Image 1 (cartoon, rainbow, N blue to C red):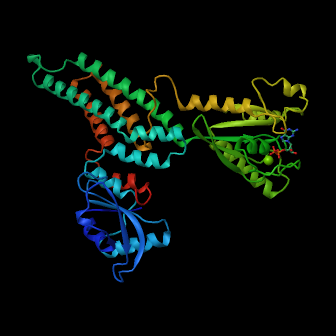
Image 2: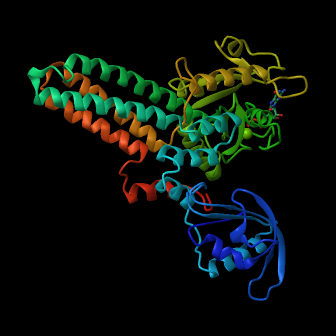
Image 3: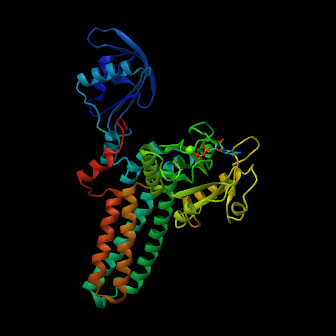
Length: 429
Ligand SMILES: Nc1nc2c(ncn2[C@@H]2O[C@H](COP(=O)(O)OP(=O)(O)O)[C@@H](O)[C@H]2O)c(=O)[nH]1
Ligand SMILES: [Mg+2]
């Protein structure tokens, strides 16, 4: 689909279209069938559907023409070039959404939610992004902002006219600030969980060679992604794949065994394994149940979030392997099952992605998440200042908090901030 936005959109696209009524007379917000022609030769190149959306009731708030051609990249390139030749230019990444924000169609948190929606990889991440798009965060921020304006004004009156008893006394201000802070702290928790749903969790399979790591990766992915063989040292590079667990993307990393390397390639593989282990949120420590468990791997991973997996549970267990506490049994050969591990993974992921009091979960950009934290901090310090400091000190923190809510909503944001936000978008959004 080709989208043209701006005051000249209709005039620029019109010469390329053949239709029963001229483009300028199209009813707004209705699809019409059109012929697309090379404006110079008049040669017809496509049949398309075209919609005009007149300002201000369009995505960008400007006049918008959208043309749905057949999807050939060559055709789309031609038509785009003709439109550009007629006086338009290519949009920069996220520019339509940026215009929507600048024209007041959406707030900044919603604009950022567009990027979250585009990047959502599971149904659950889509649901969270949809809620963010609908403006959930901005409504909450606006409520805090209004309350802050009230408190600041009340304290300022109190400072200027202390005898009149028309301002806020510090006690009342303190209780309001405490309530706001509790709200913001709850968002911080919910938004962190939301980021887990959006970004997913990285899980590395580690363990001695031949333990059954690659077989387990393949079983989890449901396809033969990694090479499996009885020859130790078969997996030399980090092999990865992603599955959805409890609606959260889980990136699985299969690693080379953490064994003494037999050659340079294996040494490099082991180095990469260690990096993968470091960047992972959770480790699956895979041990062959039929042999004595590798104590070194167990000791090396003891401080990490991990699940000990007894692989090859179809084989007789070695007594020491059988004695491992809190281990999960899996088998990837006929009749075997990995269900206990999937259940354990789901529990772990669910724990990271949600918690009681999440208010149904929110997801925000990393920028908004940092601002939520900063807002919580300035509310906390203004609350403390209201206890035992001059009112002026509390007002400094409260004005800081107010400024942060402005940054969250996009009040007085600089071009540099907008550049940073929208550069993360793809073209055409
Ligand atoms: N009996 C049995 N053998 C397995 C199982 N999983 C893997 N193996 C075998 O163990 C050997 C090593 O497997 P692999 O997945 O390559 O282990 P890795 O070196 O840890 O990646 C291969 O011969 C596999 O066929 C299992 O669940 N049961
Ligand atoms: Mg392997």
